[in-house]
Image 1: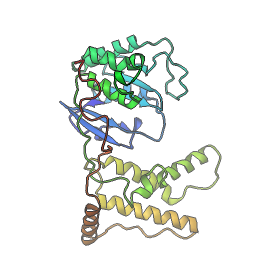
Image 2: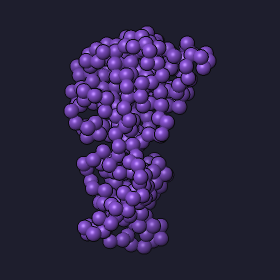
Image 3: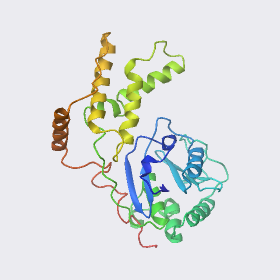
Image 4: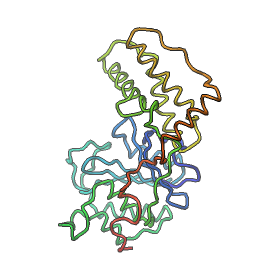
Length: 306
């Protein structure tokens, strides 16, 4: 989460935090919040957030969300970066990997103080009552009469609301679906980009002695370009699709021991028009990364302690 006068996904150095963007919300007055992930899981988010705040000259809040916990990091230009662990600030042995590791001695009181100071420095007007409840919900929750049990990603959005941003809008619509064919052959978590990354890691660790195939670097570059273009700008969809088809054909050729196919540099205006027409007809709704019952949209679970 940060404040910027450009779309957040165009900020320099964002890939140190993540590049596989899922949901981007405009919160008003330049504030934006992005759900994203990267190849390095988890990243050293404390370092990345600190560097981003200086590079973007803006306050930055970064959260790494694991299965049962979250590590929160806050930074602002010229200020020390702070970190804290949720839902239990003292749980240094939560079982999840955090980089850096959870520091011993932290408390929710410490984390609350850091958050209030960060929000104030960022020009936000936090609700202390709502922030306190969002931080400590697990210790006051006993049954459904206390409200629904919430997961870590929901808790993080409750904290965002407590910063004085109470109504979270629907995410921005994508310019195209990054998981539609032919892009899906490369971009899914088990697609060709993931396969190329796994092969590179294996070679680096001495597990493979072969040379990288011609499609591997292309797949990694396409994956990055697809998500960078997700909210407009960047590479045209027709070019991304053509590259995905070539990569898939080159992958099959490598498996079969045959030469890679000739690259397609110009699809032609008619073919481009036909493909975009078909794509538009196949997608009745513009995806935005959310489910129909997305719990992170709207006023949240505890709107009353404002």
